[in-house]
Image (cartoon, rainbow, N blue to C red):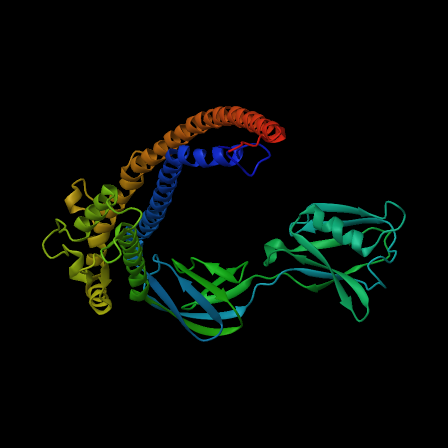
Amino acid sequence: MAVSGVSSGAIDVRGLVDQLMQVERKPLKKLQERESQAQSRLSAFGRVQGALSALESALAKLRQPNAFRQTQATVNGTAVTATSSAAAAAGRYAVQVTQLARAQSFASTAVASASADIGAGTVTIRDAAGTIVATVQVGDSGTGTLQELRDEINAAGVGVRASLVNDGGQLRLVLNASATGTAHAFTVEVGSGLTISFTQTQSAQDAQFSVNGLALTSPSNTVKDVLEGVTLNLAQLGSAEVVIDSAPEKVKEAVAAFVKAYNDLESLIQELTKYDPATKTAAILNGESTLRRIQTQLRELVTASRGAPPGDFERLSQVGIEIQRDGTLRLNDSQFTNAVAADAAKVARLFTATSAVAAEQGFAVRLRAQVQEMLAPQGLLAARQDGLRASIRTLDQQQERMEARLALVEKRLLAQFSKLDALLTTRQQQSAALANALAALPSVQQSK
């Protein structure tokens, strides 16, 4: 019986080999699926690493004693604005501003345009002490311009900024000191070959002000550390009262950032390890012991007691940080605020205390050390990630070897079925020839 195919031969060699190769490739497909799953696991562990890093950053800020000595500055009046740091001392300060700091400024005579000819020559700039800091040359080609002079002064980089200003349809070159104060004053000298001159439009001056009656000066209107840990911004002439006080809300923000980072990590672990019995589907890291160990170690620390002197806080729950049934933390705002208001130093020690004995360390210190250990190159997380990367490399190698073997199998099958196709084609042709020969024989009638 002849075997027909869609090819020009007796059988469809390509189609038949493709079907057989689909069966041969099933083990390769399983390897690819295993690699895809390993890649997904590695990516999921990368998310855990990111959440751990965020927690470590929050703990790094919280373990600093300054995190519990936050202050805030309140200003009554418009003469100044103020900001304060943890180094600031509480108090009230009367500030009187009698003069603001200004930068030296000069303006040139007006010309028709930026490209108008102003001659050729030099412009010399001297600092407040009279020392030459720059000598710029314009008009080397015979024709100097304001634009050229502007560019040359700016390129000199001597603390003087040049810019073109439109003045009623004409242009002037304005020179401004890059900083305020008499120490940054300068003068301008114009050579004889130039047709412009410069006039001072504003003299340099230092700020003059007083704090609680003490007369002070500053080259800048931004005054730092006249009051330790306080930055004053002199805004206008007049008076103002600056009040520095503790800022419990800022302290709570630092603790809330830790709680959020911890909860983000806990929620992520739950998401990556969950199992849905209704659909019988498991998350990508379901069954991963590494995540269970991370989760367990952190939970044990946040629920532990700290060895502390009598009267000090020993547990996070004593300041309103409570663990919930789902493993996340909850910050009781009022309880925490009351604890800080009663004794901020005692709350600080609960988080920041240092000791050679781990059990006596503050919670931020202990937790950060634990998280850093987890994130270390030889830590718990890295070991699992390295294992997955090694598995991916092995699977890649197995696939390469299998691809090479399958290529040989496909080549062999194509050769075998091509020979079979040729043989069948020959047999079909012989059969057809025989049938045609028989048909050509004269018919014989049998007599009865």
